[in-house]
Length: 144
Image 1 (cartoon, rainbow, N blue to C red):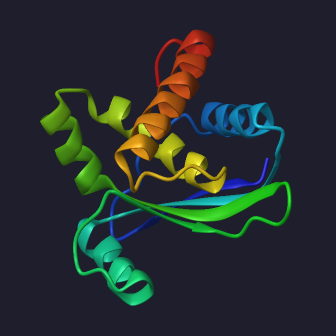
Image 2 (image 1 turned 120 degrees about the horizontal axis):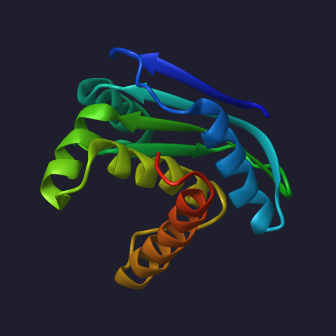
């Protein structure tokens, strides 16, 4: 499956890549879409802030930025994830780092599938889709 993992400005994060690839593919096919190329780029806060400034004209930190390269029903994109934000969010929400990373990894895929999170209603729909996908992952493999 053409899902790749890269790091920029951080040490490599340990994740079960094969399982994540299968999980992402299953999620995409459950929405009747096909997997194209997805690149996960794990990075620092500052690296992602620079991406945010350069491409989105937003000068603030964020946990994730997704660039959508979909063509028709083929899901492709670049998903940038700040590991520092994930760590801080995990503390704030009182969950493990891996639990929060799991949510953010799927959050990017859901953006590629057309979900948004700008309005309160969209945030609720996004969270429900995240929860559903994470439940699928946990049912199959028990733990990230």
